[in-house]
Length: 203
Image (cartoon, rainbow, N blue to C red; front, side, top):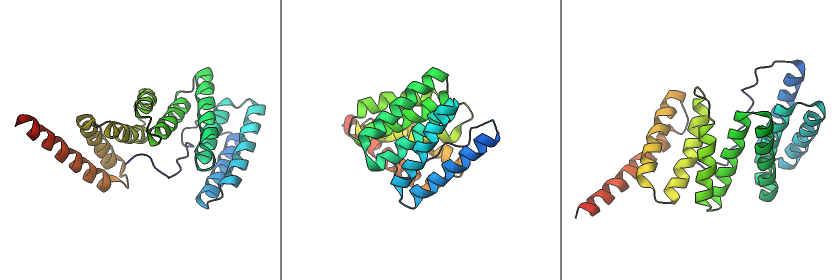
């Protein structure tokens, strides 16, 4: 299900394989490794240096991506700063017409709002994110849909949950996703709840 503790790192969409980008990629992966070791402060320091470097070099795509990654690290440290970083990433992505960057930041921010119980705001952000997912980007689509399931379930929109989960399970199978069995069980539970509501309504 959504609202995960894992770190996702959007580093697979760069078409330019310049030496600078490869170096930035390596340093980003080094920061990811620090988060996996629980060294979030060190990861934040490394990503902040990448952010400043990208900003000074005019590498605005990398600047946007670094803002998103910093936001994900700061979710573990200070949520208020994480929100600020995601909002900055959204603004920059708008300015440079970087749809994937905006999609990622909206998804992360929507996920945070959901975990705070701000479900209507979460849905608005997640729907925006979903609208920006590329047609062939099935992994990103699955991630956003997964978060939408949690927000709709929190609002007792069970039929919508069922529809969304059916697509999540389909994408799980297509992607060979590790959460396939958990999502199938979740779908079965939601179907049972929907059937129970239908039975009560017919009495």
